[in-house]
Length: 320
Image (cartoon, rainbow, N blue to C red; front, side, top):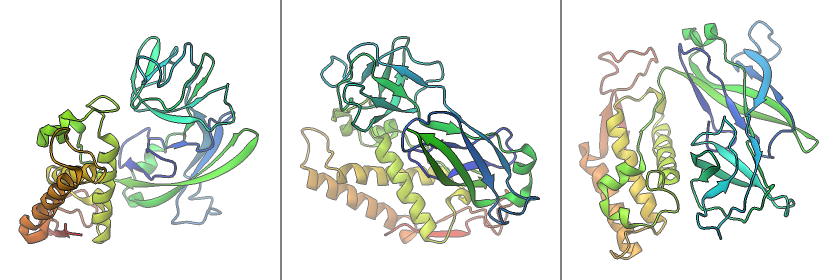
């Protein structure tokens, strides 16, 4: 699922049994909701085309309680002592609600690991939790998009809609999200360990979470910056090819954002100098590659084939 509410979801052409997800921003719904997926090329009143599918927005089966004191004052400030529901897995986003201070908004955490008697957060917990505090998922999942629909080449496109209806705390909400049907999901695949391989001094940094996950939020921000850069050139990132180069660009951008957040290797240069070095690396790298431009295979006609017209067709100016 996406990291925040309303981010587009990409479904892949010709792949069966795909679903969409929504994390309710208001908290865990009191029951399953409903969802309808719409083809925005046609009016919603066109019953031949809409909805694409409609049905239950099924809540993720994660709802349990803290079984022993957990929080920043404990020996492991990332650990939430509990009996994890079977559906819990690394990467999930969960809400923690302290029943002692129930008026406070829930704390949202990202699951880094799951054991028989605990869930580990990717970051130190921000509050203290006593026995009975709630651990819940606010994620809902749509019915599967019909296989015949995702196998129809004429449906390749963007900005389809999903209309979700659900109830939290006695109040009914309606949320609209957007999704695409694409041939290819563009991912840079940059990991924290890639960052540390290129900038080994950063391994001296004291991570709030495990080194494997430590820079993940910054990497995601860098990925969005590179996506925006590509969109700004009038191109669609999902039609780009040449992932190794794009991974390299995301890696360089990640290093710049790390420095921009005043993160530096302990015992090394001062933050402004470290940032300046990373900015120069970003600018110089972009300039060095074909004098600021790079040509990559781009599936311009979205037919899934890189022919002679597509090969090296896209010219991207990498300098902001």
